[in-house]
Image (cartoon, rainbow, N blue to C red; front, side, top):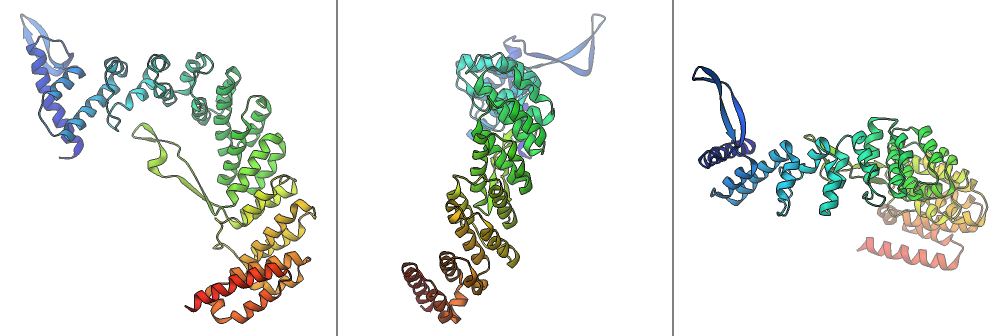
Length: 440
């Protein structure tokens, strides 16, 4: 007998016990006609009935039935789950001044979700009366068109942070015109939330014209950090560096956030996003248990992103972030090739001569030689001694154990080409430590 049938069998036994108790005490439970069961009483046809005990009667019967604790809890949760679906408001009334049941996939966690679909208007009142944030937040599980006016009636400051975001994300996802309701929100925090949720849907569906129109209309209400970060994550997900050119339409305070976030993303080989809301068996649940989406950052995308940000002059003030994105510790070399390496070199040499771009140029040159250390013969042709020195250091540090084992003298010669005495000494010491380690 599987778990579900086992529980149903147990509930059936409890029903029998509770019905007997109900009839013995002359209590009136829920009356259900027995289909096809008719009788004749004094010349009149009547239907036989079954009496369904109320959930409190079932709980009382369960409490008086000896059984293992695990089985007792499972059957109790089954009763609560059925009650939550049939009469969620009645269950809330029953639980007033009582301890709430334990959270569980079959327990009371469906109560607020069912209310959001059947009677969403009672959720805010219950939340206020009982200080229950979860009751207010559950309204997002219902129809956004119904939930919105209910939330709109709340006083400023009463809507939990993030709730309007989730509501408008769901609403805009099913109705591309749902964002028109934003204009009716007077609470600044709730309005910024709604803008953020709407923007996320527009970006993930590549509705860029709608997105930038939204930003223009709501520029006095939006949260720059959330919008900028949302744009950056969307760009990583759609994997099209060319779309970054659209940032010319952004306000400076939004764009600066987006650029910084993008640099943080491309400093890694992959980025994970989540959790999100998913629906399982008709119940929305956070996606932690279902895993998150992993997005891999290709070398082409990394370089393409930096090219566009540089062309528009958007790296101003973020040069340190750009250099870190190029030489980040989270970057591997598995997707390297000679052509890409050459592109890094050319981009570095084409960068503006401005002082603030020196660290970016040096980082790009280091990336070039790390991607293709066999090109160390080309280092001598670099335009400055500083670029040549750091390239030799990068070439030596990129040599694998095989090269060190059979070409130790040649690698030492590369170190000898470093003009800066201090840098040359540091590189030589690091090299000898590696060689000694390989010889052990």
